[in-house]
Image 1 (cartoon, one colour):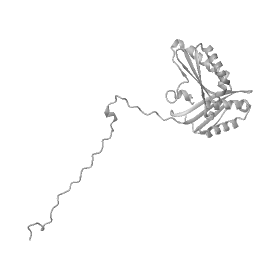
Image 2 (cartoon, helix red, strand yellow):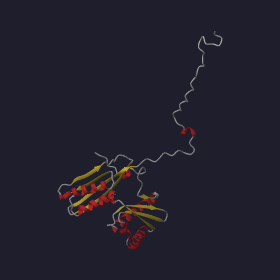
Image 3 (tube, one colour):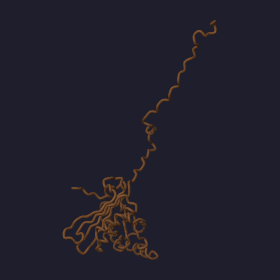
Image 4 (cartoon, helix red, strand yellow):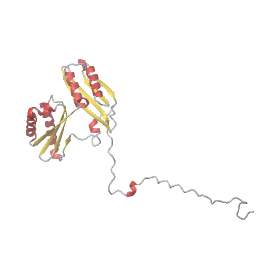
Amino acid sequence: MGQKTHPYGFRLGFTKTWNAKWYAEHRNYRDLLKEDLAIRQAIRSRLRDAAISRIEIERSTNQATVTIHTAKPGVVIGKGGQKVEELRQTLGRTTGKAVKVNIFEIRYPEVDANLIAENVAQQLERRVSFRKVLKQTVQRAMKSGAKGVRVMVAGRLGGGEMSRREWEREGRVPLHTLRADIEFGRAIAKTTFGTIGVKAWIYRGEVPPPPRAVAANAPAAASRPLVAPSPAPAAPVTSPAVAPSGTGAGSA
């Protein structure tokens, strides 16, 4: 059996970072985790059509900073920033703390795995053929600059009695390479004949490792080359000129 590993959890601390950045003691951890879940649920329920990819939460002593990555920032902001202010007040009442909301725009939604999965789920809910959806989604992502795409759907595809799993892939998606920049997203399509799960993987290329830093107090010998330099070539030795026999000054 294959051991499935989440692409983000596999790369945490190496090429990926956490979506929630805060620290709590054992007695407070459960309450803060519930607050995070409530914040994410409130945002996604109020902004279902805003094409939200991910939500990052960062906490300080008396303030929480929520960063929303979306492909439609105008829908999140609203007219004159009215929706953002209402959302901030709602999150403040939910957490009981001051909440700051930041909005980042996703300029290439065709290469975002979460948005791809949600788009496929919405089309499946409109009863579009899953094969057509998979092919079009993969081709659109490859044209947008992705180096590899894989999209998989599972469930009662096409209303069949037996659930099955179908997937489409183009390019390469190295899941076991830690340096690989893999975007992963999933969504659920709620159809009349059951739920269909959607998963998407996007490969954007390899992340170069950071350069090794040399410590300031490192010994000088550590920076010397391991191979000793070759000695300079010796100067050629020239023998003194010898006069030929019989040509001396005293010869007659």
